[in-house]
Image 1 (cartoon, rainbow, N blue to C red):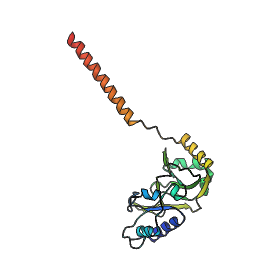
Image 2 (image 1 turned 180 degrees about the vertical axis):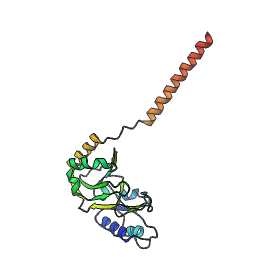
Image 3 (image 1 turned 30 degrees about the horizontal axis):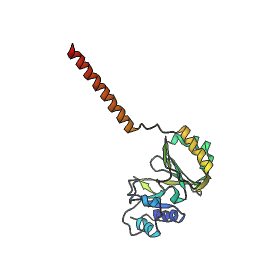
Image 4 (image 1 turned 90 degrees about the vertical axis):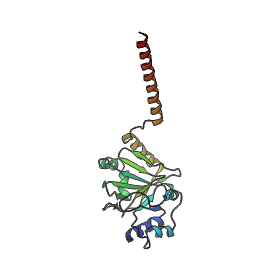
Length: 212
């Protein structure tokens, strides 16, 4: 069952200084293991062999943990294909970095390293996810539901400056800001207050009616 291409890629990513983890099966992006430990340390070669090698009966997919553990790796995960052209027009450097095409949406994942010590948080924007600290990204040659992740630009991962990353973030915040979440606790409190006022009014009306 073992996929030799997945094993060789897992080893290559691990040897290049990235934290790799196995996915549950060929139909899921879910991790096959409790993976949060691998946001702090990289898997050993023994672990990589256990997960992806000849002796494992399961055909695991391959994911890379993003963030500091993988050398401040950040992946721009495009969900909406209509955003690709404006993004690369504004940031042509994305055409020069390692890029994987996602299996389901056939949209690019742009891999970058940011030259700063501070952690970069994973964030969701409208149509674009930033996979960074505390996240992971499915990578080639994983197949999910018979659709394969493929490398479309086999360039080295581009390292960008802190300032370049800030420009990208500012652009995403301006053009792709997600709708603001309503504070559910505050909303619940407001609803409860509203119901209490309505009930008080109803009781007052009943009292007035009974008086007359």
